[in-house]
Amino acid sequence: MRSRIARQIQMVSRPAGMPEHEHFRMVEVELPAPAPGEVLVRNRYVSVDPYMRGRMRAEGVYAAPYPLNAPLYGGAVGEVLEANDESLKPGDIVLNQGAWQDRFVTKATRVQRLEPFDPERISLYLGTLGMPGMTAYVGLNRFGEAKAGETVFVSAASGAVGANVCQIAKLKGCQVIGSVGSDAKAAWLKSECGVDRTINYRTCGDLTNALRAAAPDGVDVYFENVGGEHLQAAINAMNPFGRIVACGMISTYNNAAPEPGPNNLMLIVGKKLRINGFIVFDHNDMRAAFLKDMTAWIKDGKIRTRETVVEGLENAIDAFLALFSGDNFGKMVVKL
Ligand code: NAP
Ligand code: FER
Image 1 (tube, rainbow, N blue to C red):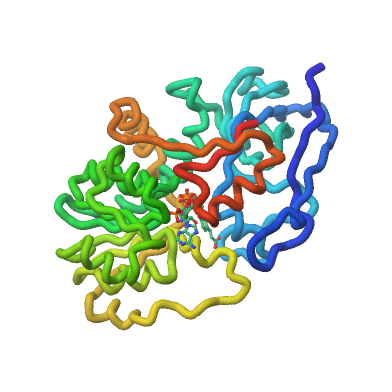
Image 2 (cartoon, rainbow, N blue to C red):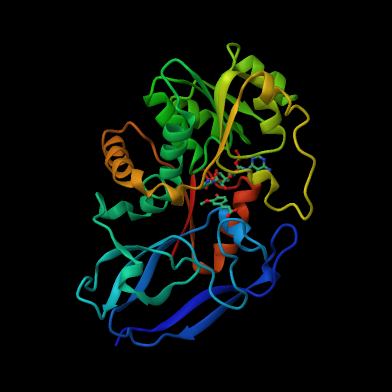
């Protein structure tokens, strides 16, 4: 019999500010044999994503909070070890929601069998071909409505979502400005992703001035991943009828108390700006088109992918925390 000993990371207390190791523990459990309709999955790659920080809070807006003393969950790609359901067989590669654990038993209906276009690159289904890539596609197309010739400003531009936003916007014929926290990330965006101009927000001085210099004709679409000073600078630099795609505000996720907002919100009125929040999970109607387009773009070399791969479930917490210090470069995944 294959091993049914599983390791899982549980949250034992809710962090107030930046999470620390003491908020989590690694637990070993013996899994039951899969009951009828169930499968045993061994994960190969598990995802860590910024939204997980929101689920660590007691109150969620959109998603249910993670329970205490139970495995955390989120996107993962694994292999079916045992199947007690005719829809799946051992060896099948499945997208699942069992992140933060190396093995688990779940209903067959709760996993999605993948037909990976490249079996060596299954982690892409957590990044460019997965939730973050689709977030870029949905946000830019459905809410940014970016048109050829327009200027698109992207924050966290080299990340899992941002790098795809930049490259899809270039494919649409836009001018693209990316903000990042390191010169190496800026150099990669320019050389590999075709980004026109970059800003290193850590070294640029006043962000509004830097953005105005990078976008002398103004910003038509701001793809918001960061919040705070980035949002204020974008509002300052937006053109009339500009669109702000409110995807996330990672700079605020570890705040223990709310911080003051941008000081220039009145500009939204005079510039007739539109601000659109969205959650990718509400837009599954675009999933087939996204997968078709994105797979073709990757195969044709039109979209470049970059990952930071951390090895070992025991390093998942550090991998997660790296999202908030910028120590990831591209999509952060944990290889098991
Ligand atoms: P990511 O960009 O791959 O990783 C996070 C990056 O954010 C870091 O590498 C860092 O890059 C930047 N960052 C972290 N703290 C920052 C701070 N205080 N100020 C400025 N930059 C900071 O993560 P991702 O998965 O692509 O997520 C990006 C954003 O999209 C997040 O806001 C996330 O919540 C959001 N999101 C939303 C949806 C949705 O459905 N609405 C779906 C997926 C993701 P630098 O080194 O460049 O600072
Ligand atoms: C994310 C940030 C926030 C995300 C989802 C949320 C899927 C949801 C927030 C909420 O429930 O309030 O990156 O990605």
